[in-house]
Length: 166
Image 1 (cartoon, one colour):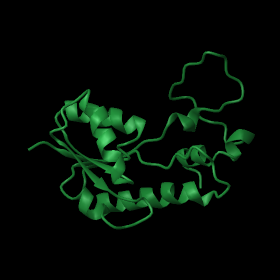
Image 2: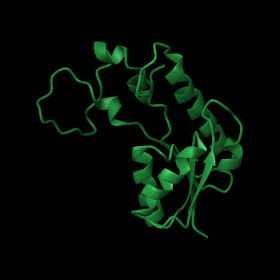
Image 3: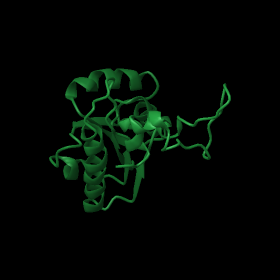
């Protein structure tokens, strides 16, 4: 039996690529979606690059406890990639930070309850995107991080939640 990975936010761009790599490496992947209507399109995309025989889905909400412990059962690893990414930014800071912070805690607790071996939390390029003086084009590496004092960042709650600020 292959090792099982709980992959949160599987319908997202980075998570789809992660799922493809995991499936091609032989892992069983249980992907979380916030809405079941995202499953077919996600399957269709992933199936172009990997067999989906070891892929399954569960609908879970980062703001609700329901289902997280069950999803983490029998998983050796959890890769937490889910985070809200709205196309229109709300003035309500909590609309992004609550799912990011509380959701991450829910997933962590589910992993602890299931005795997962390893827990991986990812961020996104948004955490290193804004820096005042950069040449164009610019290559990013592990030394690049967003300047938290940049005025554009102070208003960008998605970027702040990906940088771990609350």
